[in-house]
Amino acid sequence: QVQLQESGPGLVKPSQTLSLTCTVSGGSISGDTYYWTWIRQPAGKGLEWIGRIYTSGSTNYNPSLRGRVTMSVDTSKNQFSLKLSSVTAADTAVYYCARRYNSGQNWFDPWGQGTLVTVSS
Amino acid sequence: DIQMTQSPSSVSASVGDRVTITCRASQAISSWLAWYQQKPGKAPKLLIYAASSLQSGVPSRFSGSGSGTDFTLTISSLQPEDFATYYCQQANSFPITFGQGTRLEIK
Image (cartoon, rainbow over all chains, first blue to last red; front, side, top):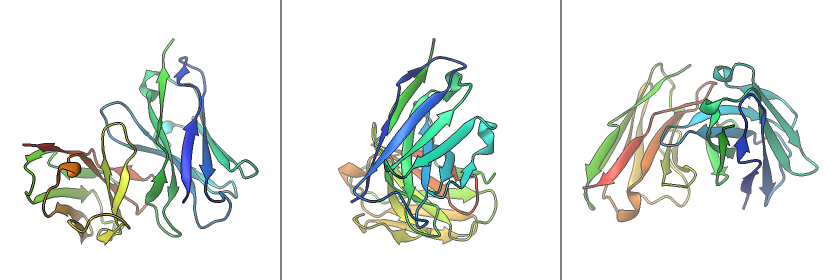
């Protein structure tokens, strides 16, 4: 059973870069059946899709994040990562990593438990 | 972007009640819709995909219907563990977008 776990700093200063890693266990991250995604949720608010990455390196990002997002994958470590630059308080949220459920579909299961990132000086 | 609008934003109901939540897409998305359940402090859980397909392990009291722009999630007989927030998500095109959520509370 595939499981995902987010990790990274819980506190980031304004204007700096948020960096998170998602470690995949119970299965290989490689292959094109699945892609890997990041989704965030500010406290008390709804879900915002950030972007996706295939293990080939192909990516799609949410235009709302205005070019601040970079995703990468490390198949040797069974991990994928998120970088969000020039953060502000508006980027404070719980960040989830997730996997596409199956080929040709764009819904997500499983998800990681989420990690809270606070942007504050 | 495709806008997803859920109604109601919150609903109060009792154990045993039948509850329906509606999700409307700003443009047609065929059956490219999923429903998630989220409990406080937890990640969303996939309940329904392809508008009406029940995810493995999800109780049969949950059902989904609709296509095009209008969709519904129905819980046929509420159980105590069903009180949570529910989100719809369009899977038709990028960027992926979610509804604002419907909070299901105990009456």
